[in-house]
Image (cartoon, rainbow over all chains, first blue to last red; front, top):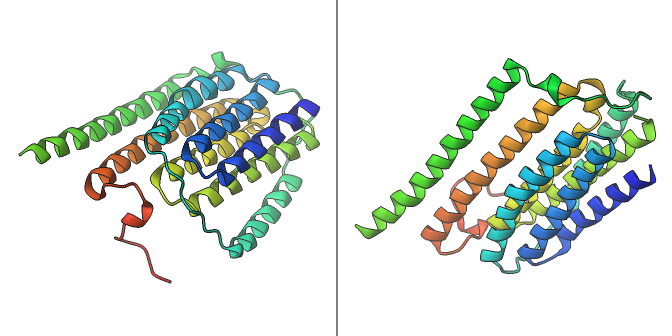
Length: 154
Length: 103
């Protein structure tokens, strides 16, 4: 439990660093650190497939693209946060706390997850559809970029 | 999974989500908005852990959907950054003047 507390604490601290830093580049690095800590919690509970997914795909691909974008457009933005946001935050925290307290999720059993059980035709179809969606989105982004460049030349 | 571990996970998830929201509403440019959204996805991943003890296959499916959604969000925001940079020569969110209400 001490390790879980340490991972969770570092994750929260690095996420607060994202909010407090003025430089987008450092903010993206702190964000990657937060996500790696979240993945570390998965490893702590022996959920290796999700750990690999988060570290190698979520942080390794998406996070690094964000770091590259932040390094390209690097400047310090100003912040403005209203104190009135505290009210919905407190209400949400209360509802979340109560739902956790009342939920039947608490059990003393160890988490049992095997990747082999997940690979069923239904889930494979889901992954296939999601991959097709991402390819369509990538083609749209490419078309926007190429189309605007050609429009600018003419 | 013990109750105290569950509490730590949910409190951490909520804290990261809250920081993500605060970063999003205080962001002045699209890069910071992208970082805030990814933080929120990190919070979603954190809150998924207890589900693995009850419905592990569905939880893994939700994790995969979250990763694909995050990839889609990244692609859309890259398109938005490129388009805004070409049209307005900056990526400040204040450059977008269409839509929204004035309070």
